[in-house]
Image (cartoon, rainbow, N blue to C red):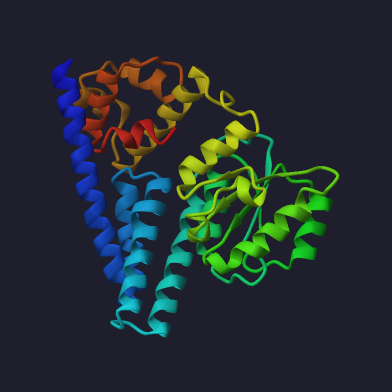
Length: 303
């Protein structure tokens, strides 16, 4: 057992090192305005088994933070910063199109920034994380006028409204928006995110939850709406594991027989696993990860 734990720790360390390298390469690419290089980094991250969620956080977000620092220090100008942002948005669009979301959970969310806030990248990321999690999402973009947001919510009746804000000066407008939303005949839950709320509690301005981490935020949103156990059955996990193994195998041009030999597992075992019909041990998953030359997280995912 200790050998398995040690091996798992080594894989985590390698994954973190690889993520840091990809983050640095991506940051350099967008700071230089090199779309081709940025796309190559994203493709490399996907080929290494990094999930869409981790690419968003460890590559896109980290890259944008780096560019922001360069702008603040005067090493790049506004035009370069804007170009870097557009490159990242285009890569997010590309990744969104090829990412297989979780099964639909029947919930609807609206994502926006408050009136007057034109910083929408964080909101776009939250909208994408919700999409990946199986939500139906309407992304309204930046600076949605309060009366129009309320009218849209009255018509579409979302389960959740996510408001992302950058500056503390945006908080009063967010408070007004929440107050209006809570007067609707069918009140949505409200989730907050963004730098504006680092020192502001959700309850103090009428929201239900607040999170600076989109993964944790969506977990909290699921709990808030009663989905703590939804879509988490063993059959669902096995189906997803099988899909990931098959995708990684095909990406490497391997047959089931070749994977079977490389992993030291029976070919029938591989076949039933890829069809989501085979229960597995951590030891077997590690053998598959080694045979496919990916971190174990590439098979287990972020579930």
